[in-house]
Length: 95
Image (cartoon, rainbow, N blue to C red; front, side):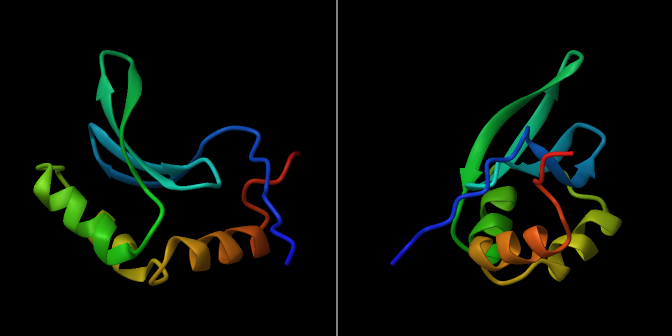
């Protein structure tokens, strides 16, 4: 079985969770980052399920806006499914 890995040119922003939190991906996992001064610091890495991602956000006190929660609710059930969808939309492709 061949495993195809997308070489993402950089982290791709997925959802702005709130003013100081964002969800991005490097093509291998979702990354939860917090703004520190003028840049985001990656803190948590999840490559499993949307449920695990949402639980991690809650456990770690991540602020999520209503709009961001709706976007989280629309994510596929697993990270692997999200990657397939992201690739289909051209996300992670080199320009």
